[in-house]
Length: 166
Figure 1: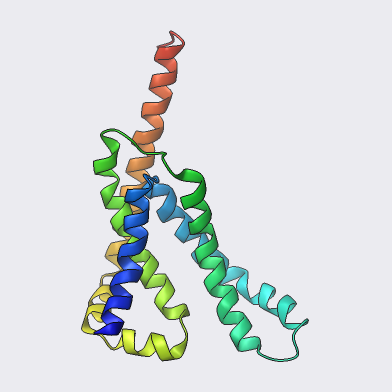
Figure 2 (figure 1 turned 60 degrees about the vertical axis):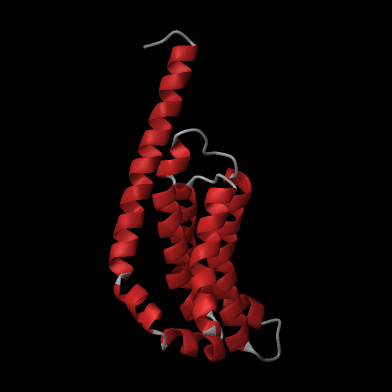
């Protein structure tokens, strides 16, 4: 039951932060995508650099580097994009926010220490979420792209009206 709460927290906390701080869910989702790319392509080099300063513990260093590379872009997006969604867009922001939370859980769990990771991965809820991974990513990317297009288009139109341009 405890690990089910951990999994629920990993999925719900980012979604609640995005909605509560009125962060653009598309930006939050894309920041997790960026973090995932950093983990895949940069973590090894950073681990090598940091390991050269440490006498031992390369595995632990790699684990923390990977987790930091995933989470830091998300936290920066939360910090810099807060209060970027208002009005009627708050409701449509719920879909990218939910996708962000689910993606966060999907990406963070494999980076957790083994003694936390294994019990979570044995949960039926995790298996179901993991089986929906493709749907979460495709839906999140689609919602995010549409949300960004509508958000950007609305801002551009408002600026054009403000300056008397059509």
